[in-house]
Image 1: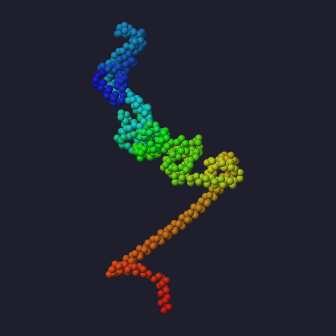
Image 2 (image 1 turned 120 degrees about the horizontal axis):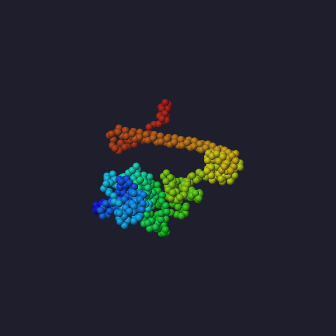
Image 3 (image 1 turned 180 degrees about the vertical axis):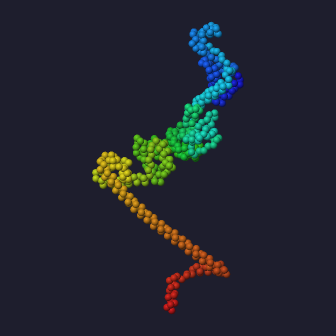
Length: 504
């Protein structure tokens, strides 16, 4: 093989991460394709790369037969023996050299395209072989470019795709930024070959980061039983310890929070709730709802995995979370549908059921069995019964429509009475609020008038002090005091003086 060609093949193989033999095979196939295009015959062309000369040898192959039916692919035994003597035998294949220097520029261009195609195919197979079984693994890369919101990540010799939907909304990147992501999958097909799909939102990234930061997870002492995320906002991860003396939550948090803070920084400030996994459903859901504290928990439907959680009124918003985020993540983590209610909600439901029971008890023929069915259905309040139809009520309670209509009419009367009482209460509350507002306004006005009067008195005192400039400071003070303490005759006193003068 010529030294120059050998170096070229080795350099290309190293650059593309493929074996040199793959490139040699590609060269042979390229010359074969170009030859068929140039000669335009049905001859059986073959190529072989000559290691000594570094050239691709081209030849056609003919099989030795007794009677020739296809001169392009067959040769008679007689003709073969003329060429090769007695060595030629039936069914042997004889190679006939063909010139390659006549292929021309077009054929060379075709050969070049074939070589590139074969190298790309080999490169794709190499990529799939290297990354096809690495799903869930965390890799490091660099932002290379952007394509319609997607990010192309450079990982050594290969490129990976970070789709827009797999990007955290809390993150923004520029070309050259370092990216740490998890391999979500490798698509083998496509015009561009295998495509490595990365993710920054997948819970697998959170799990892998904890495995890297927490030695107890890496060695199996602490196990991760589940992880859920709403990337960029909040995540919950459930951990379990195989040893009693190891606190799984404390191990994940680390001394002064160093371990979990490292992960939070990597996820650009995403809040992480670390909870302890429990086999008991009540304990597990109680932990998952944290940081909110629950008052009680009851299983509504074990087969359907539905629970009802009661919390204090002031804990309701914390339990639900921003836009339902906390309860949504808790439900995903535990696999149970969680219905959260406040103590006030429960009290209201009890009152509404009691109101309905009182209302329907006045209807002749209403039985305890009917109430048992109705109270556990969707029609368990007066308003819901009013909004339903007599047919639905009849079907639910297995009664005739006449009885159902009587129940619904009773509900309508109760609803109207309740609405009237609520309106009267609202009007009374409005009057009370108006009266309180008037009193408050009067108090504000009186305070303002008192302030004005006080200001006027101070101004008068200052004016009196300015009229006696010759007095000493002590005399001025005494004079001012006398003036301030001296009372101006009231209207009644003036009237009494005038009356005394007239009598005199």
